[in-house]
Length: 187
Image (cartoon, rainbow, N blue to C red):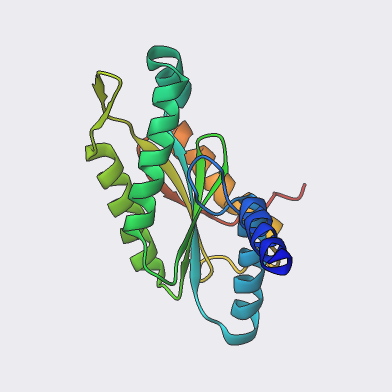
C-alpha cells in the first residue's frame, strides 16, 4: 500500500511540475523540453514543424473590466478551444499570463499558416459568458516554421516567434505574422 501511495504521489508531482494548474495545459518547462526534441528531430530527419505563439489582445482590460475570476474563465475556455483545434501529434502550452504556444509537428508552412488563421478566427468568433457578462476576445499570433528559417536551438526559435508576435501586435493585433530572419546591416 505504501509503495502504491508513493507511486501516486510521484505521478501527481510529475504532472504538477509539467502542467499549468489553471488550464491543465503543458507548461513552459514542458514546452522547451519538447521543442528541443522536435528541433533535434528536424536537424536529423528534416521533419518540418511550426511553433505558434498566441497572446490575448488587451487581456488586462478583461481583468480590469470584469475581474480576475472572469479572466481565469477566459484562460480556461481559450485552453479548451486551443486543445480542440490541434491534432493528436500537436501540443498546446500555457507559457505565462495570457500567452500560449502550440507546436504543430509534421506540417507544411502553408498548413501551419492556415491552422494559425483558423485558430485566430475561432477565438474571435467565440462568445465568452461568465458571471453575467458576455463578450468576445481576439488574439495575436506569431508563427515560426522550420522551412522558412532553420533555427539552431530552442532560444532562436523562441526569439523568432516572439518577434513575429510582437510585430502582429504592433500592426494592430487580431492577426498572424510569419517570423522572418533578421539580418543586421553591417556598417
